[in-house]
Length: 220
Length: 220
DNA sequence: TTTGAGAATTAGGTTGGTCTAAAAATAATT
DNA sequence: AATTATTTTTAGACCAACCTAATTCTCAAA
Ligand SMILES: [Mn+2]
Ligand SMILES: [Mn+2]
Ligand SMILES: [Mn+2]
Ligand SMILES: [Mn+2]
Image (cartoon, rainbow over all chains, first blue to last red):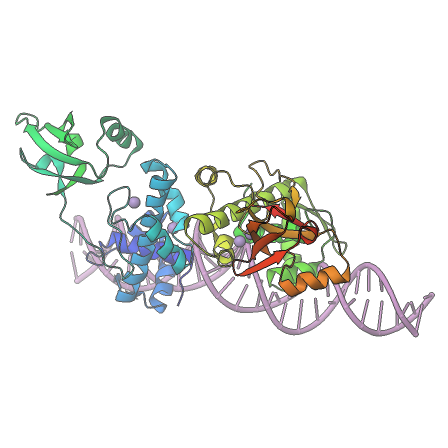
């Protein structure tokens, strides 16, 4: 069975809003995420229910099915692979890729995705540090901590940011704290929670607790 | 103004069928090209007329406007750039690319196309030897060379013959050197100017300088 | 110059995706 | 427990893109 572009977008939104099927999602939540009206969502939920990618009980919410999860993860996989392509190969900035990936994720061609994946050297994370599901929908998830929660002398790798505003990304770019950078905590200031880190064993940078709390690390 | 995916596809078909606005096209021609019914075409022609990308007089056919040509050439440009990407970067065979390019050509992002063009090193021809319009819609008139003037390792596509005698055409047929065939020069013999070429990546043929000088190639 | 074949258009219907406004169901408050 | 507020669904409509069947138009042959 194949899904329409709109169905793919709804399913992806449902997957994200429900945190992979764990939390419950409301019609209004979906509507605001999709920038449509609740009436349109009700209509779509009925259709998604008929296609059995969600289990839908009127007025009582929905549950994404295993089939639905597979579709959602497939779309997420494509979205993130394209984002890697745009950044790594076409020199897009982090904050320029989303709109385009939102379109590219709907291109139908298993061969294309397989080849793209190989061309990009089987990346495991997208430019925002989010994990790329494999072709079976498996997501390798490693525990991520906020940089401000790390202790002195602990080390790790920057894998994601929680604030992806252009201003924040520009700041990171400027100080050289890019995704993938290896870091070590050199010092922490008790008073205000600010932190000093060593980036890639060569550059030392200071940042406020506020900034650090928006940087996600996988420790190693 | 923006065109829908369907409108882009119709306009591209009209552009091609009319040979860039030179020949007249019938509703039935469009219908069979687009694999739709004539009734659907009439409907679409009315819409395209309203958007002034064609000039449409009921029962008397249509004329693509300058605006329409620009849109068509833009879509063709994107289609062919993506084909180059698929073949050069993702190792698609040149007969596997069309379906996917048919989808990719509708992605809306001027920046994407600009960057893709640069990434591919500003190619002038697609994998089928068709010219890629530049960002202003200008198509470089395709310089044709005689096969005997090509050098070893150069590639191209057979586009015409200068001798159209039955005997010559019969010969071409026999060796599989038909119009449209992609060729690569494998070897040249200094002594008599004879040449060895690879046809469609599978068949090797020898020909005299005399024969080769009657075959016209667009290099790519 | 009438007529008939074929081409093209219109009429009316379907599906997907959206909307507003009205109605119904659930949740919260008194 | 009753009433009000909020959420959700339904009703009815619109637009894009298609379809089949009926109609209209053009053009060439009788
Ligand atoms: Mn999307
Ligand atoms: Mn992302
Ligand atoms: Mn297309
Ligand atoms: Mn081509």
